[in-house]
Image 1 (cartoon, rainbow, N blue to C red):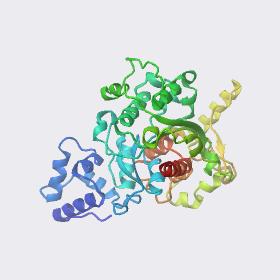
Image 2: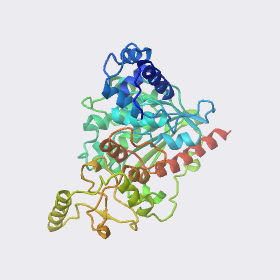
Image 3: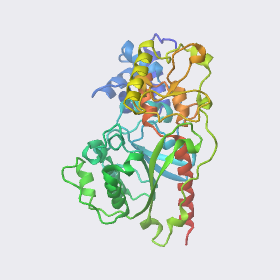
Image 4: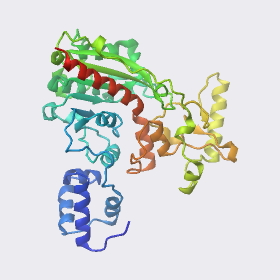
Length: 425
């Protein structure tokens, strides 16, 4: 992109880009990692009083001001929803495509915020524990892929003993205050068996308004969340573990989904056991080759993905050591004819061990997936912007995200159920 020499040109460029992105001075400053006086500084840039540093100017030039999934403000939405622990919008997009409008987003990670803003033209609010439930707009559906590390095998299964595991109580306080008609929560499948099922039972009891287990005063949560524990919810709730490979994505990714509908709104006589059905697996065979880029395409960008001799030797050595111990841990190799891959994780950027693509036919070491291939593996559209942050960060973001194929299938069932429930006399 051509460097703009004159202060006036820079001022106009910055102001136009910020407005095209739909961002306030504060949001724009946050995207540029600026501190307390960021708004004042940007106001000075836009008025021509002073110019950004070379580093900040290059950051501004790299920003995309044509968000591909910006909501159509002219279109009347069929329903309104909020997107909590939003990551990069993997849960949001299918609901938006079904006619919903996102009216509030929260995501604390500054790199995920950048990717989200580039794609949706909105800057997510930050730490949800610092946001009052009363300040959140009214909405019909609450969406939340709440932090899962503490319930996963990688997170040592700490659950409610870790602050990340208590984010469910932030969801509960918003449900208690805003009473949306429905919600969708997503987490790792290990939540189902965590603490011998007691953690999930506590969550379901709270959502259903049934007898609650005592919540320890030692569990860290915001004061508003602790106060909201006394509020009684009244949702019909069900959960199910769904696998990405059953819905057309070549990935053995299993996640638990918890769906709820507000019985206070719809009425106690509405039988959601009959109205709501979980999506049925498509049965369409999957193939890893369907998400792979052409080798020529990758080479034209420079081959950054083939792993080094040192890393490949280390992978093989560790696999041999695990084999001697009688377990199957270590790298996993796939080719275009493989039915599906392992689960893409947030640590994938480190060494790619869970998903390596075989290149032996070309006389090369295996390679990692490209960021675009990770996007495809998670069901993201081809025009989803993947270069708003560094490559290491985008790998983390896709590893932490959801498979959009599964979300879309669940979203369709939820919207259909909401429509049918409101038609009941």
